[in-house]
Amino acid sequence: AQKVTQAQTEISVVEKEDVTLDCVYETRDTTYYLFWYKQPPSGELVFLIRRNSFDEQNEISGRYSWNFQKSTSSFNFTITASQVVDSAVYFCALTPPFSGGYNKLIFGAGTRLAVHP
Amino acid sequence: DAGITQSPRYKITETGRQVTLMCHQTWSHSYMFWYRQDLGHGLRLIYYSAAADITDKGEVPDGYVVSRSKTENFPLTLESATRSQTSVYFCASSEPLAGGSYEQYFGPGTRLTVT
Image 1: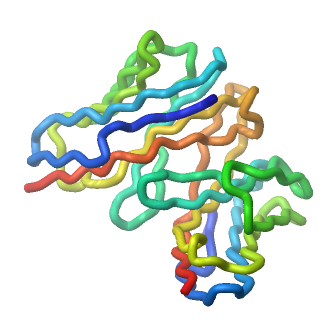
Image 2: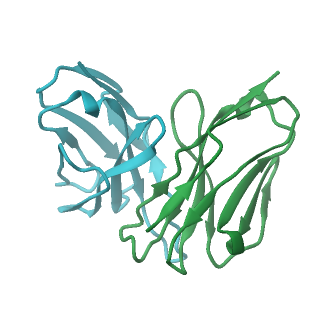
C-alpha cells in the first residue's frame, strides 16, 4: 500500500526560527516521485518541489531545503529563517507512476505552519 | 487567462440536489483529476482521467460522476448531494514529460456546502 504520513499536525514558530516539516512515506515501488505543495491562507495549492526516487541529493532553493533519505523513507522540508509569509499548510505527496497508474498523487494530511512576528 | 479554472468558487446547495462543478484548463494537459480536501485527510482523489473519454475511479468515488468529452474540461457531478459531501474540491491537471515529470497543477478550488 502507498501512504504518506505527516505526523506534525501544527507547528508554531517565531519569525527567523528554522523549522523542519517531516514526511514519511510507504511504497513498494522502486520508482516513485515525491512532492511538496504549499497551501497559503488564500487556499490555492502551490507546487514547491519534485524529487524522483533515484536522486537522493538534497536540494536547496533560497530559504527552502529538502532532505530525501531513502533508507528511512523520509522527505523532510526545512525552512531557514522563517517569515510570516511562510505561514501555510504544507503537504507532502507521493506518486508511484507505474503501479499507481495515471500518476495519481497520494497526499499526507498536511502540516499547518504558523509563523509569528 | 491561461491555467486551470474552477467554477463556481462557492456553492451552497440542499441535500438531494444535483450539483455540477466545472473545471477548465488551457494547457492541453492529458491528465485531469478531482480531489476533495477535508480536515485531517489532506486531499483525496475522487476521479481522474488520462485523456478525453477515459476516466477512472480514485479513492473516494461514491456519489460522484465525471465525464470528459473534451480534453480541456472535466466536470464533476454530485448526483444527489449529501451533507458528507460538504468539502473543498480541487481540480488538477498534469502532463507527464519524457523525463518523468509528474507534478500536478491545481485550480483555485470550489467550496461546496450541502445543507
